[in-house]
Structures are given as structure tokens and as C-alpha cells.
Length: 254
Ligand code: PEP
Image (cartoon, rainbow, N blue to C red; front, side):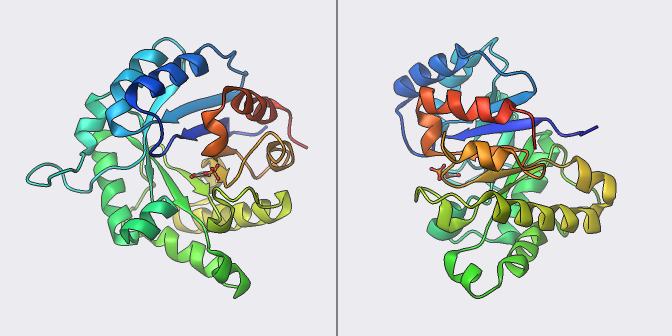
């Protein structure tokens, strides 16, 4: 019997004002939630409270797109794990490729962020994935292993840890990975987790796929035993696309 429930995480990125995000969240909350699929939505920081209110009673969890690695203090513009917890957040994205590329954040930053989240009992969704150039150079496995180095300081995995395999070349491009390619990367990540933390952790940790998930690409990707759900950007801003992707997530695996 499989141990991992499917997980759909919406990343709304820097789109939607708080009012527009609340309206979209109300529409998402009204959707029939398919059995066996957990759902979380990550709006922008200023929209967290309005989205939290819109999701009340829906069973959809509130997520954040990032966190700062320090506990408290003179860090203008940053947001702490304790602040996110108090705002009703339960899941936080760490290591998204847009943070890596735009802000130069690295494994040492992600390790510190995950340590802070663990202190507050917040679950990290740690994002990894290779660039086109790295894939073409045959370096995908090495890159993923290096990125998992953010977990080096943990004797046991951060509570609630899930991974998102997001090949950078697939994000926002309309070119999703093939199901075979995603399944291979997920199997590699699972083996790496098992090597670090033991087989039961490897088996139990959810690994989501992200990168141009859509009503067209989701059924093939979710048919793979290795793919435990999706981190979804563009399609998560559309109620009809979300409905279709959720239906694919709820379908039995091959
Ligand atoms: C993402 O940003 O995590 C993502 C997967 O975006 P998109 O679905 O738009 O490719």
C-alpha cells in the first residue's frame, strides 16, 4: 500500500493584489476537493491574511513563498518564520529557482531557512532542479545531489519536509518534463534521501513535480508512481486549469 498522499501546491508568485488574491482564494475554496489530495496555496506576503480568511473551513492550507533565515532583528524588508506561523502559514517554499537565480541564494541559505522553519514547526517544500545547460552537460544527478546538501546539517529531516523537482528549463516555459524524465529524477532524489536519512524516510517523503504543469501535462506526470503531486505556478492562477490538474492528481496511478 502506498504511504504518500498526493499534494498540490499553488505558487502565485508576485501576482495578484491582496484583494485579487482573496477573490481567487474564495473561488479555489469553493472547488470540490478531490479525495486523497492535499492542497496548499502560497500567495504573496501582503496577501497572506486575506487569503487565510478566504480559505477558512476549506481544508486548503496556507503556504508562503519564502522566509528569512534569522530569528528576529534589524533585517529591513525580511519576514521571519515566527511571523509566518502567527499569520497561519503551515508550509514554506525554500530554494525556488527564482530565488537562486534572482537573489543568488545558495544551499547554505536554504539550510538556515529550513532550520528556522523547524524551530517553528513549519514544513519546508524544498525546491531543486537543473538548468538546461546542466542537463545537456549530463550533470543533472550531481546538481540535485549538491542541492540536497542543504540537508547536510540535519540528523533527521526537517519536520514535514517535501521536495519539489523543478527543472529550471520547464518553469514558465510551457515545456513540461516528460513523465519518464521526471520519474527518473524523482527516483534519484528518493534514493538520495534514503541514503541520508534511511529507507523509511526515502519512501515516505513526498516529491512533487513543478514546471509547466497544466491540464495537458498533468495526467501523464501524475500517472507515475514516483510523482506525488505538483508545485504549480501559471496554471494555479486559473480555476478551470486547477480543477483539471486536481482531477489528474486524484486519478489512480498506473
Ligand atoms: C513554479 O514557479 O514553481 C512553477 C512550476 O511555475 P509554472 O507552473 O508556471 O511553470
